[in-house]
Amino acid sequence: MGGRSIFVLLVAAAVTPAWARPIVYPHSVTVMADYSEGAMQEFQAFYAPTYFWSYGAGHLELGHGEGHRHEVTYARVNFLAKRWNLDGAQANVFAWGGVGTAHVSQWVPSVTLPGPPPSEHDHGGGVPTTVPGYQRNLSDTDWNAGGQIDFETRRIYASVKTDAHRSSVMEHRVDTVQLGIAPYEHDVDGLATWLVVAGTHHSGDAHEGTEWALMLRFFKKRVWLEAGATTDGGLRAHAMFSL
Image (cartoon, rainbow, N blue to C red; front, top):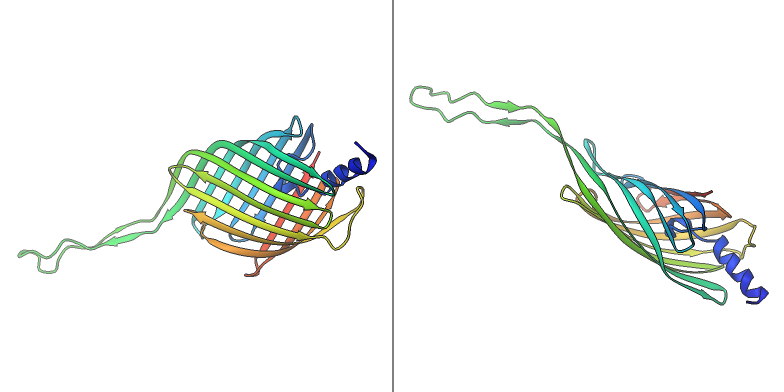
């Protein structure tokens, strides 16, 4: 392999957007956090024994209004199914699966039930009955599966991602597309800057809706930060640290 090819591979590794790639460096621990105001927040930690697979755990919380909580705690295995090292570019296919526990907490409001109809002996009818509100908690085994396809040069990044959770108490799926443009070509040890447009569709019991966001991404070696806003004015933020 020539010197130029080695340099291209190093650059591709250095600018990896970690949220889209659950395997960053061999023999590394990667910690990731993802936040979308009013929709979800997720924390993940993975260890990669090699460059093509990793394992770890995560915790997902989904917004569903006041008095409602949808949470999933899970263990997961990630695989690099295919990688193309091209001339000045890289493309990847990732797949993952896991199992965990889904927990749903719902506030059931109080209900006033009408009394029995009046009889010939009680012309006024029965007295209404009020059933007080209560918190209902449900839990069950959760199954997680998803995948990611991405393509990147030193100036352009594009990705498509899907991630689904399914259990008897809740189902949730999120599909995401991203397009990023770098205003300058950065060096291996330099700071990478990206302007990213992201479209995300949530479906399932916990949250339904589509949001678009504009974000600014900064990445250098093993630290990656991204923040921006959705078209509704909500905060979107992501962070990654690889040790």
